Image (cartoon, rainbow, N blue to C red):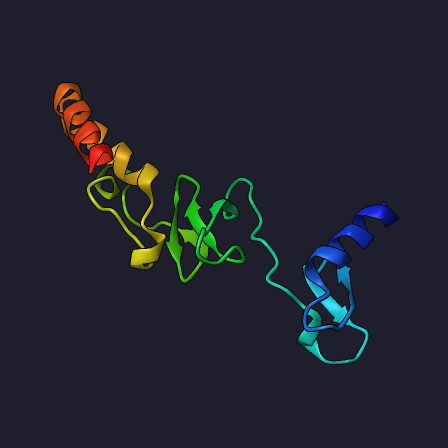
Length: 127
């Protein structure tokens, strides 16, 4: 997988005119100059459990949303301590920039009748 390491190094470790080598195991760059000026933002890890369900659109190195049973906290997914039945009553957003359309659409579909939701969606798209 030498080619993959070279591609990742090219994508994530060539900032500010400095070059480095990407270390998959640590998800970081080792810069050839000895300073960390070569590292670009490395995308979040998407997967199950405490991995991200989706990377943030505002900052790809942080989570934008989490898997079921986990909550978003400062760009990372942490175990959710609230009862799952009760937690559906709340929408938690890290910042206004991380406002998730999918989460809002889910809540709207759950609590607003289909005919009303369709009219609201159409009105919002036409604006």
